[in-house]
Length: 391
Image (cartoon, rainbow, N blue to C red):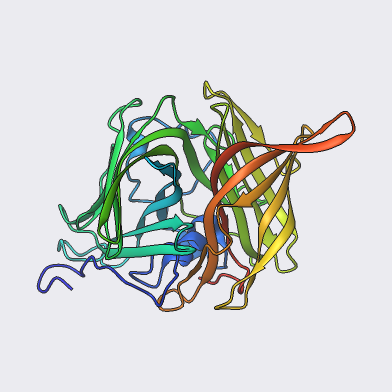
């Protein structure tokens, strides 16, 4: 708490593990708001603007915040390599939430908007994730998400950039046992997901978000682990999404991937699951090195579990290896950088889930013999395996 000024941006350290923000009990609840898991009366949403098809995304304006909408996130995942060739995964997320609390209060201290930040490192040397988060009510210069460009911060954690289509981003995160300062350079225009950025999340198009991705960001900077700092380089993926809607009660969780392909392209795909683990909706985007994209509909993306891992801490089973089939007949296998990339947020949100670095292998049949080759690296996110996510 910043006494007399603001509900403090603070680092919260759950009992090991955690995921997607826990500074306030909101993270996966925010994901639920955005991807819509849960139910809520329509009149409670009436003050939020709807997400509608045909609304053109405009850059750089849409790189920034959209404070009228219920919630949004800027989500960066990627792989880093140091001079010794050691590879690690990393994740950085900033959330903005419109609370509808104190909106008629002129005070700058009114909690009309919340900003939350989460960061994690997947390091095979430790075998588990390093994770930290911060949160606070919006206050100019301290905790904010600006409009017109990417400028989000919680205290001294920040992600900044996006003042032009080809502008780089810069982030800095400092936690107790890790930190990083990284630059992200794009080489192409944003990839619009769904129908020109209108991304449907369920059979009813009411349940949608505005959504673009920036694959193949070139990464450079420094990584700090237990006080030791090393130079790193690599590649990253940025997602920016905002919405006001919710999804049907029947959804339990989702599986999502963002993969930088070695040929310079990108692959995003997700499925929403019901209580029996069946897909109730799926979609994706396949982009080439020039950024030209192909929209993948519900029949074009199929996730099939291959191998499961049981957490020794929670007893929850996660399908850490998958096959992925696309509508054009291509098949892939997802393999984790390490099995234990579970995040336990029971100290705050009450949710437990898996999010981590993965490799993508193409499954091929040459001359009657099956083979596979690595064709990409990225991130896999799986929610709803402990219990149904609740708002």
